Image (tube, rainbow, N blue to C red; front, side, top):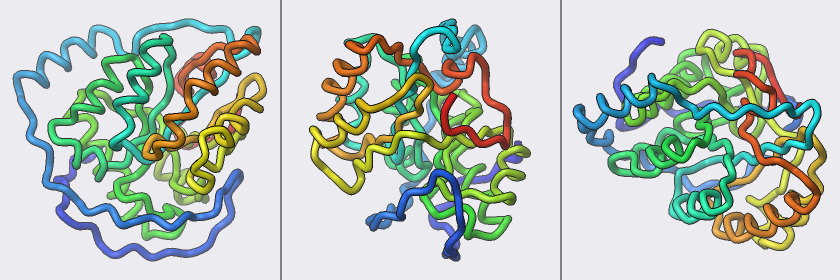
Length: 264
């Protein structure tokens, strides 16, 4: 992967409407102001790299072709509610997949939250640098959106991400080709909680509770109401006999770069 210096500002992005499956309506988002690059402790990073090279992510073997598995996924963070969510998941020994936005990672000084995501055994994925519709940007901007985020996560955690989620689910042949070059599988979803629109925990929990075996559930850890819904979601799906897995665990291996996945 080519190494790019983190920018203090990105070029203006060009938007266009494209088709993708599944695709959710683009919500109104407050602009994310780029932060200064996080300060990296080289000694601490060296220790993390040694630990990670010894075995990350933690190996857990599930045969999701035979048991009822579901993958919880969280987009757009890390944010102010992510730490509380991680506490909830740790208490129940549940693993999830977090698709992080590069600017949000940069704003978390020292990478405290992404460190914990990795340390707790969760999967971490690329959700672009500033959350544009990737199908509507230039090839050069597409590269920057993916590579800047890959770079900051690697510098902070020593992890090379293997999965990504295109913002809004907006993908096309150009996104597929670039993600293949970057070694990133495209992970979409088949259960959309619409938690960005309906900020009510009971509604979010009810939608997530309708998952089927092999489902990938879309949520956002930047919303308090979503994090509030998580205990109910875990209770409901656990009572139905589901095992909570990361995206890669759902498939039993790292998904194929460039390929698009919506469920098992």
